[in-house]
Amino acid sequence: MGRDQANRVQGVMADPATPLSLGEIVENGLCIGCGLCPSLAGPGAVEMVMTPEGRLRPLVRQTLDRPTLTRINAVCPGTRIAGPDQAQTNTAAVQDTVWGPAERLVLGHAVDPDVRFQASSGGVLTALGQFLLDSDRVSFVLHVAASRSAPMRSEQRLSFDAASVLEGAGSRYGPVAPLADFGEILDRGQPFALIAKPCDITAVRNLARLDPRVDDLMRYALAFVCGGASDLSKSEQVLQRFGLGEDELALFRYRGHGNPGLNRAETRDGRAFELTYRQLWEDEDKWMIQPRCKICPDAIGQVADIVASDAWLNGGPAVDDEALNGIIVRTRRGLELFDAAVAAGALAIKRETSFAELGELQSHQVRKRRAVWARLKGIEMAGKPVPAVIDLALEDCALQNSLAENLAEGRGARDRARRGRLGEPPPVPRSEAGAAMLKDGLI
Ligand SMILES: Cc1cc2nc3c(=O)[nH]c(=O)nc-3n(C[C@H](O)[C@H](O)[C@H](O)COP(=O)(O)OP(=O)(O)OC[C@H]3O[C@@H](n4cnc5c(N)ncnc54)[C@H](O)[C@@H]3O)c2cc1C
Ligand code: SF4
Ligand code: SF4
Image 1 (cartoon, helix red, strand yellow):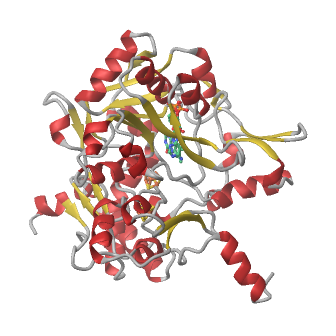
Image 2 (spheres, helix red, strand yellow; image 1 turned 180 degrees about the vertical axis):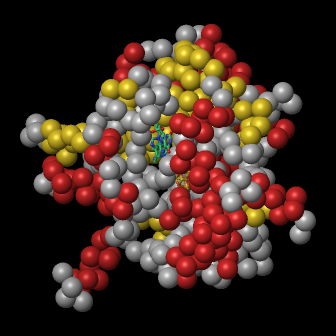
């Protein structure tokens, strides 16, 4: 394979003759729990379960035949990760090896002060979701929100009005399956927008190659720049710190109500507990980021129409930073939406920005983009499967590293993969795991 081709396609293309089973996808640390595969497997065949580790994973209840597994491998964001469709950008769009394409790069925020306050950073994603509904561009917005019955858990939300979009404002760091029942969402036959993680959008873009309804109905895909989704166990640690049980909770907010705002838990009997963003994330050993995130080739949402990021101009998150987003408008469709939202007074621009400034504000994303090529090579050397990564310039990103840095990344990943540190146990629902331990006299 020549360098151009190697740069286009990284990893082993899923071989239709020998697709990975769902167990192999999960146990090799490739699943992020997006929730899409049950829709492809047919009724009752695959169920998303919460594992003892605090991850949402697909559990196979009925044997899947090879054609079904081939479809799942073609769609799963753990097995196929493709870059942006160049037909969606203008020829005048700027392009960066690390950051991908952009029609427009600005710092900005929602105009509505309630949105700005309640949202995660500057409220751009919420304001865009609301504008899409208010301007009748879509019938609903598919995103996520805190569960009303178990507020530390996050769940899929279909919002048909601006108030419901606002209810989902804020970052939900734990596991969530935004694409659960996605077949039923398409069956509605209504135009919609998706606000989600870059990997969720990758999954839907993959599905568009098999199901023409996706491009017909999903009018906009909006993402945030993503540092990784944590296990539910991370949130459970917070509860332990507060001395609370999950059943006592009336509210669990990771951030928002300020930028970044406080991590706040409220109990049904009126007590409140808070941590600052820095306290929540002070110990990197306790981030509990899911394995798939460590090899994420597109955590910066190259496949979205618009991507929003944090933009802490003071050098890092303070409790009361200015409400602000970095905004990367990626496609022509995104540009038309962005301009219309600004003209309608839903979004305000603070000033233009650049890839160089984004790189300073998001240095961890730049490091990851440069590291992933070598990490995948290391995992392959350990004999483990890696996703097919297409048109994401991973090799060019790695060339921005020194040879020593690439060797260190590759060897580190190889050794961790050999020791099973990048994999996961077979998926088991928490309740069944608990029952088995009870039977074995372990609890
Ligand atoms: C897991 C995670 C990791 C992140 N890492 C980074 C990072 O490294 N760098 C960075 O700049 N920003 C990161 N962010 C994004 C940042 O916190 C903001 O979400 C982003 O700046 C958009 O801000 P906003 O004010 O426009 O969002 P809001 O207006 O508050 O809207 C956020 C939207 O995202 C949706 N959402 C929230 N959590 C999830 C989830 N887990 N899965 C799917 N959809 C979700 C909500 O439904 C809502 O519609 C991360 C967010 C999350 C959830
Ligand atoms: S990432 Fe999504 S599609 Fe892939 S195995 Fe996990 S839940 Fe299924
Ligand atoms: S880092 Fe990548 S795989 Fe992990 S949640 Fe974010 S977009 Fe998904």
